[in-house]
Each structure stands twice: as C-alpha cells, then as structure tokens.
Length: 110
Image (tube, rainbow, N blue to C red; front, side, top):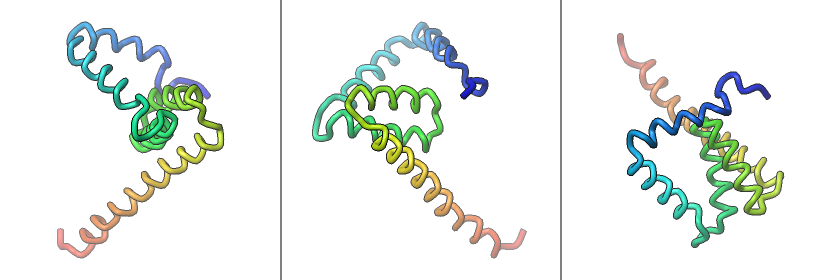
C-alpha cells in the first residue's frame, strides 16, 4: 500500500512539537507508557483495544504502531483481524446512532 495519504516520514515533524512543548509531550509519553503497561488488562489486550480504537479514529500511524506493538506483545494475526472488525463495528454503530439526527431533521420544517 502506498503512503501518499500519510507519509511514513511525516512523524518526523513531531520534533517541532517536542521542541515547542517538550514538557507536555513528555507527560503524554509517560502517560502512554503507563496506560499500556501490564495491569488489570494484559498489554496484549490493551494493544488489541488500541487497534480497534485506531480504526475508529482513523489514525494510520496508530494503526501501524499498535499492530506492531500487539504482535510484539504476542497477538496473533487472527486476534488483530478481529480487533479491526471490532473497530469497524463501533464506527458503523456510531453512524447508525447518528442516523437518528437525520430522521429527526426530516420531520422539521426548514
């Protein structure tokens, strides 16, 4: 797959963010490390959740990174594929829920 929508080297631009607000970036980095550490949920499960969520947020960098991290944590290809479909279902479900707004608007005058 090409990278014409999001260049893989685009993440290099994050250096400017770190330069401008390194303290906040470091706080986020520490937070991220703590969230994905072993806890009540194993890291593998957290990474699978992140894969589903990344498909809802549509972040290609997150999809790539969390799939790699999930594999490193021991996730199988089948588990990753299922996590992708969880994200797809959540995104589709949100669209269905938002259809209520359209149905309501149809009944209103201009």
